[in-house]
Length: 171
Image: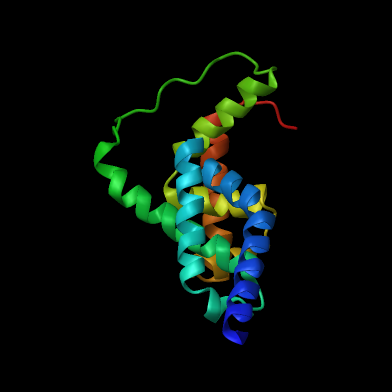
């Protein structure tokens, strides 16, 4: 009987964790893959892996960071599997030479430019600037040094600015 109560308590903890973190993880996954259905799949993969280890990790100091790391690993694994289906172009498509005023157009332009970056750069930009994580937290999530995050963040921002062009509205 005590074992069943403990199992029920674990499941309740996990359910509460999923309910609290699912929207954020799904948004992060979407920013990485730009497909809501794939983002949902990646989020579910993350939760499945966490559920399998829940007894061991549930008292971890930072389940949020752990969930981001599992998600990023799922994103990286998915990108490796789908890399054969991607089309590589010698030159980037020409950027529009008009000022982008509509927020939808801004959103699309930003996501397209983000998609043109390498996956690790996308992860760093999404975690640092969308999720507003510290450099140290991003380094821990991606299992790289703080200096790697700082360097790749600066380079990725420069690439993103180059892709967006001078006509991109800064808000």
